[in-house]
Image 1 (tube, rainbow, N blue to C red):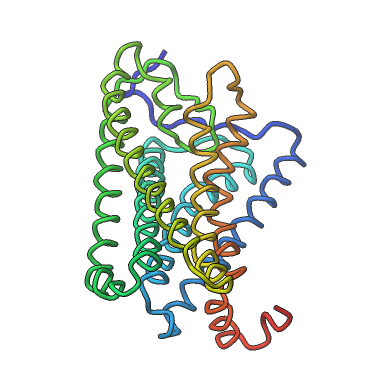
Image 2: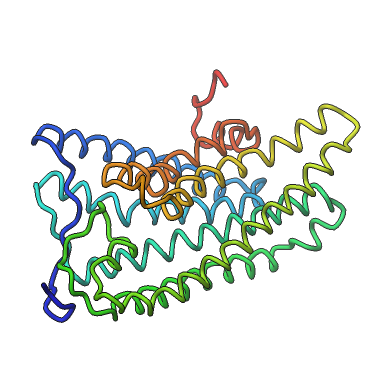
Length: 310
């Protein structure tokens, strides 16, 4: 039994198996991490370089790429380091910082995806008012509000979580510091202090989700009224990447936090956590660039010889 005042470090979940499997995990995470760095780095560079892409949709996409880079850099390097050096340790301050940045970046991304759904709604349902409703000043203010909300939310959650007395040791059943795992270490009733904040957060997240659903209901109704097949195809092409990113981000995350405890297991929790924390930053650039002709054209100019066969 340990209390929070005596804890100097936490023990993260160690990937099971032989030394060879640990090195395989290191190589797999390294490949995913490098792919995320390359993909998001190209997105950021291309949008910043090509003035034709200085529109609200690409401005928000640039913010998404920045968040993805930060999110994967918060969890994956430490996990790779632990596998390479065959250790489980993370300092108390390092764990608190990891919790803060994971919450900050992932919650900001969720708020940003909600904002991006509004951008698509205005672009398709109210195209004549697009420049008025989403001018450069408005977009900057919206992005600043999104980042500020994510920061305040993460600060509140992190401060509240690490103020709880911990009586159940220091071993976490996850490859990064995660609030539900830390709450398992808290004293029998102290976790109730965090529970009300989680309930409020769930309500707020539900409001954002409903907003996205309503936005896309209106978008699909507007698209189906477009007379030409080419116009419908073009409208859908601008929305489907966002929908795919939202599904990839929310699907595993919702399953991780809402699944019944009866089917919970360390291996399942590990797989699901990898799906919602590691895979989206690596896959999002591919989703957005696969069918986006403007982005691909800009990449061709930025890097001659690429996408010649696209």
